[in-house]
Amino acid sequence: MQLDHSPIVAIATAPGRGGIGVVRLSGKNLQPVIDALCSRTEGSTDARLLQPRHATYLSFLNADGGIIDQGLAIYFKAPHSYTGEDILELQGHGGPVVLQMLLTRCLAAGHEIGLRLAQPGEFTQRAFLNDKLDLAQAEAVADLIEASTEAAAKSATQSMAGAFSKTIHVLVDQVIDLRMLVEATLDFPEEEIDFLEKSNARGRLGEIRAAVQAVFRQAAQGALLREGLNIVLAGQPNVGKSSLLNALAGSEVAIVTPIPGTTRDKVTQTIQLDGIPIHVIDTAGIRAEAEASDEVERIGIERTWGAVRQADVIVHLLDAARGPTRADEEISAQFPAGVPVLRVWNKIDLSGHRPAIERMADATHVYLSAVDLQGMDLLRSELLHLVGWQQTGESLILARERHLIALKEASDHLEVAAEHAARDDQSLDLFAEELRLAQQSLSSISGKFSSDDLLGVIFSRFCIGK
View 1: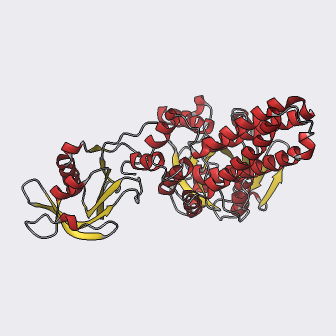
View 2: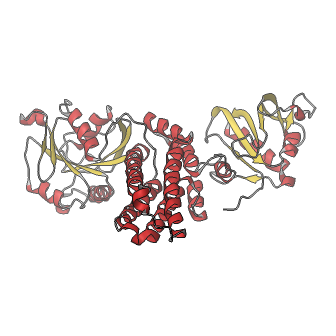
View 3: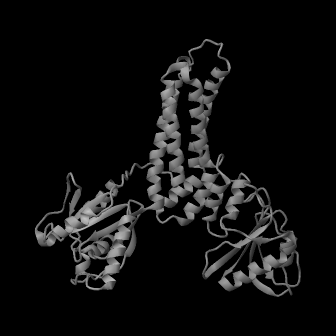
């Protein structure tokens, strides 16, 4: 990916009103903008007094010398900046109008040096291209901004500081060392050395494979922190789906009445379980199309099935006081294959059941009461168990889907390499090739072997000003 060296500018704070707003510029020569905008005293332009990495209180001027705002200017001299270029941050009041005025003034003052609006993620993209961050660290910046739980924020901070990258670099170095031994043997075939035995190549490969698998497990757990889970509450009308949503959320987020069919559309509430964001979706009660009371209810049922098809976990709610019905069986038969289903028997306060979990051949069954909160802890623990969450106390990698794919590809190549190693010295060239491919997959995580198309997609998803 080629770096566009044009200076860039953007409002770096979130849209809306706030006490403070920041306009950020990055480029090779920002002095014309500084000279045009900044004044320490009324009627003067002694902005040369800006010292790198020092905050200076001054006025931000419009074209005729009038004051747009007053605030702090901080100048970061390259290469000691976030992007590796010169950076100017103008910190003023956080009103959207005044920030837009300041942005417009910056663009006008920087016209001659080619100053333009930054694209989403372009500041962080420049930090990556200027070797201030690797790709995993750059992605962690966006993950920290978007973190919806404290655990996710902590993991993103660790990745941004380079913890994930360091782990990957260690694995890459181990693969490179083994490659060197293999390829040296290929280069000198006349040396009659039992390479695999004397260099303990099989043992070293086994250690690398175990390490990659351990990182994958950590990353898979971390992906839950980043993405969260979509849990859909489905079942017949009036089985207590909205009551269960309220019980999980700890507040009255859904309307509850004894009238069947109260919920006509999806109601979504995000909660936390062990630091994992859980997106709980309450849906319209499902019944046969002929029994639906009106067109609105039929549309709601269609949307229910749409949510079910996109669920990570389906919570099939049933009435414990009424017991299983043919309609419940018909609903269950339509659930998509491969999606975990948890059967929750609600209303045990009316049925006489005790809170319990029963693991049966068809599914796991949980007995609870959403009204008086009996058995809710059983439901929460079973939801975490279903998705494979294990609270190990270890720091987790806030992984993205591409990280998991790269780790899986590396693991697969190392497995094939082990198969070649089992044939002694007869397949060393194939052994070496699989090691090379494993190294390439691992290195793609930090961005060393990432395509321009991939980089474009990653940074385009950042917010503007970051």
